[in-house]
Image 1 (tube, rainbow, N blue to C red):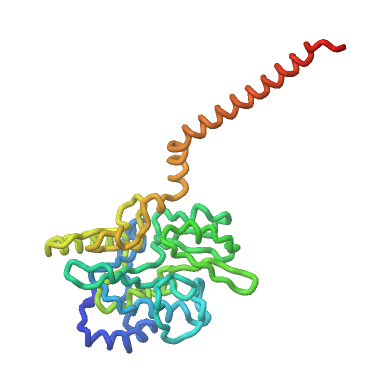
Image 2: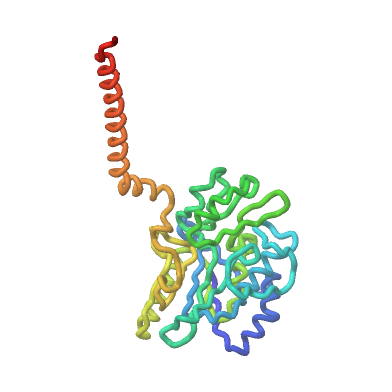
Amino acid sequence: MTNVERRLTRRDFLKVFGGGVAASFMGLSSPQMSSSGTSSASETYAMLYDNTKCIGCNACVVACRLWNGRLGGRFPFLLEDRIGPQEPPEEPKIDEHHFLVIVPHPELRHQDGRGVFQRRSCMHCVEPPCLYVCPTNAIYQYKGINLTDYDRCFGCQYCVIACPYKARVFYEGEGWGVPVKCWFCLDRLEQGLYPACVSVCPVGALDFGTRDEMVAKAYARCDELRAEGREAYVWGAGEEHGTNVIFVSDVPFEELGLPEPEMRVPAPEAYPKLFLERGGLATFGGAALIFLSFALWRRSRIIKAKVKEIPRG
């Protein structure tokens, strides 16, 4: 990934949000992605979001809708299918109109006193719970991106229910429907461009590259924050329940409403744990049922034997 200087003044922000945004969609100003690295880790895409830098401008939300809401776009597309600026939602929520939202947390403050904002979108889980519940194998992974084969999907919505981040929404047409979500703007990646949201962030709160690069940058940013005397937390960088959207924050993630660890456990990991935790109870219940059945059977045999012993007049 080429290094790009993204520190802009507030005056520059208007320029970025105006001409720069439109130009980046045409592939004129978005930074090119490097092709260095051949190992599997270096071929896995990942995004870094640093909420200590985010100013809640919603440029990323608008950029996402501009790119993914265009007429004739590849799946997944947003409901509008139109070109033009789209206003961010008044109550931020991922839906068929928004693959990502920026949620304000007015009750919280960063340790430097600024307001707190948090990105919400598909997290592209390393072991996605949605993948394991799909009955048609329509969900698959490509270089760390969780994608859906819409020729296989028949709209059962199991993945919508399984997603711990509530990032999948159901796109319902006339007589059909499919779940849609963020797809890292794969069509842009194929052109050597950043995802639309990353290409327009005026303060460098978003970054994109390989997973190894983003994890390293996340921990480096944490070192910077701690050097300033601030707390620092990383979400998704670990292999266990990891995600390919990695968060950096100086506010505990529990306060930002991210899911508990139990909600992020995929089915192959959950089944053995469920058996170990509930297996004893199930075994005891099964044994008790067998014993009860035997006792009832034996009681019926005794009653029949006693009935035969009754003298008949």
